[in-house]
Amino acid sequence: MEKHANFGSRMGAIFAAAGSAVGLGNVWRFPMEVGNNGGAAFILVYLLCIVLMGLPIMISEFVIGRHTQSNMIEAFRKLAPGKWWRFIGILGIFVAFIILSYYIVVSGWTLYYTYSSFSGMLMDNDTDYGAFFGNFVANPWLSVLFAAIFMLLTHIVIARGVQSGIEKCSKVMMPMLLLIIGLLVLCAFSMPGIDEGLRFLLKPDFSKLTVSAVLSAMGQAFYSLSLAMGCLCTYASYFGPKTRLMSSAVSVAAIDTFVAVLSGFIVFPAVFSVPGVEANAGPGLVFQTLPYVFNMAFDSVPWLGYLFSGMFYILLFLAALTSAISLHESVTAYVHENWHMPRKKAATLVSVATMSFGVVCCLSFGVLSGWTIFGMNIFDLFDSVSSKILLPIGGVLIALFVGWYLDRKLVYMEVTNNGTLSGRFFGVLLFLIRWVAPIAITSMFVKGLLDML
Ligand code: PFF
Image (tube, protein in one colour):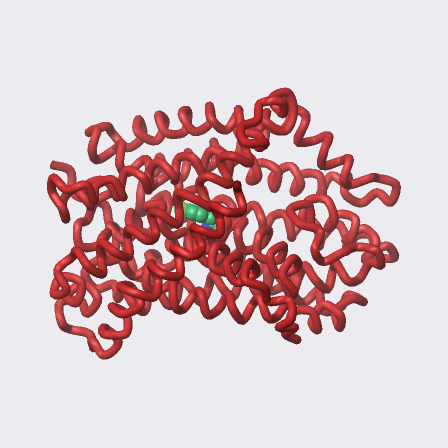
């Protein structure tokens, strides 16, 4: 039997898990949600959701992964042999596969926009960037090509293995990402819209805080922390016995939240720098509105515009890559361990299968746009079904499993590293896992369903 892989250091483990969490959700989705839901008040609720719901589930996944040293399906098989709880593992890996199929499409866009920034295509006053984006996504060759390049990069990292692929890459890319974000925030402070941007982000307007905004904050927290897809459980199976589960989870959540909030500090000063551009522009905010913003805001110093927009899309790309790696690993670890296939072969199988679905997602903006189910194209269908239905179901089940089914002593021993760490917060943690998280997520789930109907 091959020895189970391990991260070489605690730092590597934290960077890898943070890499999974920090993704398009932080830089693209978070500012969009903040913009749509009224700014600072939304951020406050979001922080509450991270603490009350995100952290307990993240720790639950860590407990399952590290205790079993297995991929998600195997983990549930070991902990609850013969029981239907195994379904949670199957669901998690299935969702990881589905999310990866459409995640590589948007990730391909980030690559194309990086290329477009540096080649000067995004710095032309006369371009209509809405049409630019529309033409790109509708072009089957270009969008598939960039998604395929992205997939190939992800594949290379996964094929190299846990320590020399995932860990090494996270240790290089996460600091790079944090550096770029720092530079971009500095640039944002020199923009004319900085005052208005800061006001929007820091001054809460509670009148905008509707039930729907609260539920969106919960959904965003869930997605952003990469919960319920087997990623964190799989990564935790590579944690060593000395890794502290609680403090690692707090570090990952803190890095993830920090990057999300800083992304707001970049996007909104930029948006408010140009009259006529709205903060609530929705999904197009980053791909359709921002090129226009960079262009106008740096009209007098074009080279700064190139640099700012180039760095911004590299940031998106790096964030997307570390998350895609974790999604890929969640599926590959299962194929590798349970189908007894060498890692490289397992990775190739997963890459080819994901890319096949990815092509359909790419084409759903162009030649296959007529293929709709419940009024959604394939891309939107994958996104909605996975994030609004399957993720919440998985999340509630994980919380119930760890909170009610698993032996309390087992959970305590994992959380305290066999009693060597203080168990002071264990009672609070268990209460959150047993009651708060399942109830909060169930309400999110019901809201998601009602939205879809
Ligand atoms: N957390 C990632 C983001 O914020 O973009 C997305 C993601 C990655 C979701 C991995 C789920 C996952 F398993």
